[in-house]
Amino acid sequence: MGIDPSTVVPWSADWMWSLPLSVITVVIHVIGLFLIRQRFDRMLLQAPRGRIRFLSMVFMAGTTVSVTILHGIEAGVWAIAFRLLGALPDKKSATLYSLNAMTTFGHSGTTLEGHWLMMGALEALNGWILFGLSTAFLYAMIQEAWVRMAHVRAGLD
Image 1 (cartoon, one colour):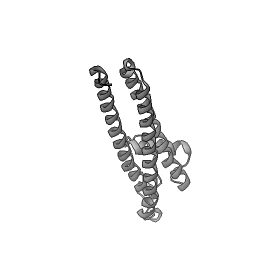
Image 2 (tube, rainbow, N blue to C red):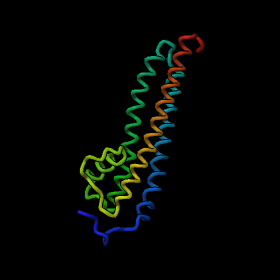
Image 3 (cartoon, rainbow, N blue to C red):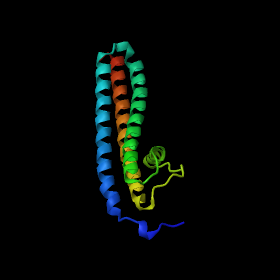
Image 4 (tube, rainbow, N blue to C red):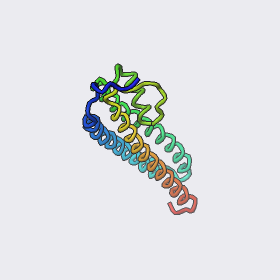
C-alpha cells in the first residue's frame, strides 16, 4: 500500500499552508498566555496575604485547563485547514488527526491524503513549539507563585 506518485503534490504546497498555520497558532498561543498572565497578576495582587498559597494552587489548575483549551483551539485551526484542503473526509476525523499530529500521539489510525503527508509532519513540529511554550510558561508561573508565597511567609509583601 504505497503512495501513488501521480497524486503527489510538491511539498511546497504543504509548506505554503503549514508555515502560516504555525505562525497563526503561535500568535494565538502567545496572546492566550499573555491573557492568562494578566489574570494571574490581577488575582494575586488583590489577594489577601493568607490566601496567596491557596489562590496560587487554584490558579495553576485553571492555567492548566486554559492552556489545554488553547491547544485544542490551535488543533482546530489545523483541522479547519485540513477540511478546506480536502485532506480529510470530515470534521471529526480532521480534529482527531490534528490532535494526534500536534501531540505526536499518532495512534488513531486516521491519515491524511498522500499528498498532504508533509503537512501532518509540519503540524507535529508546530505542536512541539506550542508545547514548549506551554511548558516554559507553566514553569515560569510556578516559579513566580513560589516567590510570591516566600515573600508572604517572610513578611516582605
